[in-house]
Image (cartoon, rainbow, N blue to C red; front, side, top):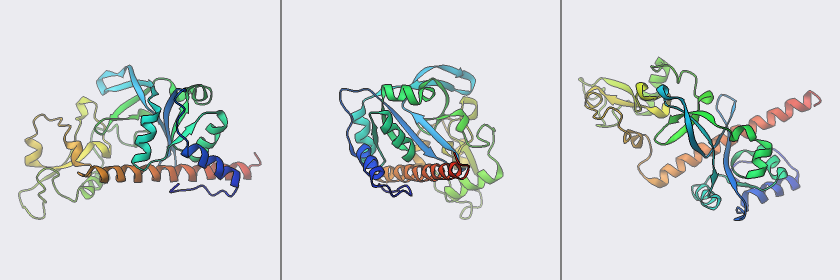
Amino acid sequence: MPIGLNVTAPSLHERISEITTRNPDPGLNYYAITVLGKEDGNMSWSCYSHWERWANIERRVELRAASIVRAERIAELWRNIGESCAVVNSCDDMEIFLLIGGNGLVEKSVAEAVVKDWLAPQPVAPSGAAGFVHVETLPKGAQNRAPTPKQRMQILKRDGHRCRICGRRATDYVDIELHVHHIRPWAEGGFTEDANLITLCHTCHNGLEPHFDRELYELLAPADSSERDKKRAKEHWRGVELYRKRVVQEFSRGSSDGT
């Protein structure tokens, strides 16, 4: 594993190796669950899901419930792009998975016994080209209509202070005015999060037709598919690292409290 916990028990390492290298049992049903840490110190979880109904149609907030997945295909996908994949067939396996975090294919009865609340319909909002994020885990300020000055400068810096469509920079062309644009418009349920913001010059911004152009999301991702996979895997393992740090902190706090 690229990142390990600060543990020494050989049996624990053996169990971690066992569940992260095994393949799904074709005779079992699985949910695909991901648990990661965040830069703000909190934890997040997500499941492969299906649409149930609208929670807030005006803001395009959906209620989505966890789905049974084609486990062999999901395991192959995660492993091929360099992400983690634990296969959880028992409650003992689940204990290890919740210790290490990352991606897990969790057997149906185990998931329903241990994390039943995660499987229930949850309010989620569109994020990026085709993803979803739980409304309660949206970044601070994401539900504001406009980015803060600090966020605006972060987006300009991320995009190299140039228009992502034509490539021109204000330092090279005196007529350029740079805008931070919502790819999915606010009026159509778009949130003010980094994954939905892009730098455009005023000319390209004014010329957008349609105004909601999904192809703009592609401009935020590396053009080469292997580079996209590397970026996704890097972000995944950073989330795993943060999750494990939080787990260690929780264990340390419990030990100091005598619990």
